[in-house]
Image (cartoon, rainbow, N blue to C red; front, side):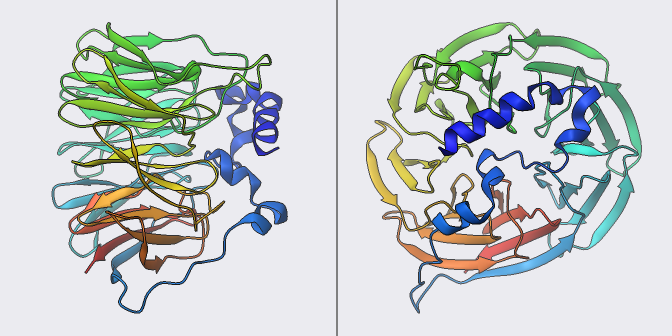
Length: 393
């Protein structure tokens, strides 16, 4: 029933991702499972499992309030000695990475729906109206460029390009200097799709993006030409509802492979250079996939956390005590794995067996973004606008 309700909502609001209808989405989470935050979903949510007395200590190094996310999902970005973050009301901030001290705070002048993408010289956010807005390292606007529809995922800076994904399945490469369009890649939208913050990644001289229908595509940064395509999952079923199989989150990349996961589909890894499939697993998610030197980690759409062997896809362990807590993708941090939930908790799991070995609370609102690496810990941003730098001791 959860999947059916999810897709009926998408069908009812299918026309609302264009510039003329973005305001209708402001009160909706972009994580599909967050759409079920009422009493029925809460009744199914697993209670907080106990943590051993000798638990790993997770401590808040600093915390800064940026501003509420509304219905959007914002991801803080660490670049050098700075952290950049944004909020729905147009706020963009630069923070000292060591202390959280505010370096500057500006307003982009429009309601934002995605961010932050950053490099040493550029900070880029996306708007509900379909704008990519670039600021320099001092917070001064460098340019504003219109794309085709609302920007749902943080842009990325790739050399002299800013790559922006719009809600209508178009990927735009903009000149980092002036925002002028270099190229556009487009795929047709299916009748129904999961509205999510599916972003893009870069590795091995490629731009990698997942799409509806379970497709993963590798593009050439210079031209937008397709280098290879792979099937993360294949749509199944007789109805449009049953056949929704959308890649979610950013593809995870290493020096040799790229992995992705699809809602109502599978988790799969491919050879980064040529797209040759390495392995697939029947494992659905709404938050994406992350990995390290040994494992690929996935939170499934029922709240199970999985560690898969990176080379073969074989299951190594599963943690099932966080059921229906609407989990982020699991981020490996040294010998632990951290995963955030809808109540603002971050759970610390042992990397080798999945045991819950620690926990830290934030402000009680949902952590709807995936944790980002930070020193000996990670960064998270809550729905209420708290940006937290957390260390594991």
